[in-house]
Image (cartoon, rainbow, N blue to C red; front, side, top):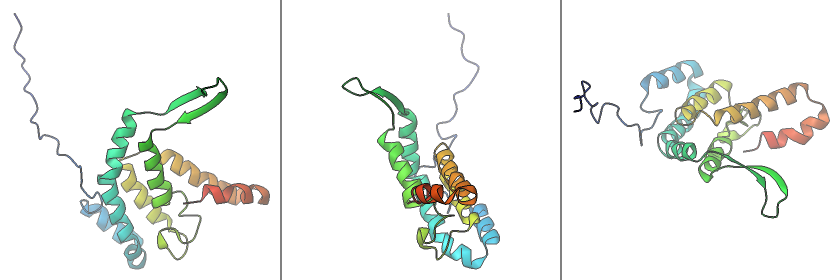
Length: 175
């Protein structure tokens, strides 16, 4: 004989989905904070990018993150001929997330290069962090390599020899 459960099943809609939401437009407090902290000129230039990343985070990025989580990176130690390659193979969903972060939005490059996202100079740090906040709502794990790339470029620019800066900074800050 089985004992009846004393716990009721949670309602199917107890946790609303965020699928397809624009994470920027759905958050009036964040919008207010951005406008207050950035000032009018910076905010006006940043708003379309915040809106675009908010849409991407609530749609494509969220779907890619779920797919990449189900297909983690794999170490490929040997090639088909038995040669040592020690290569990390990432799922296409993860590669696409890298394209969004590093390429489409230039999160690692924006504080180091002029012209990223059409900015007349370097993107202000406050904008970079606002965009990172939106990105993290769907994919936090990729922000580690994004921020490490940004930090490496910053340290290299401040403390690296001219030879090292010439050799590595262009690739670290590409979009």
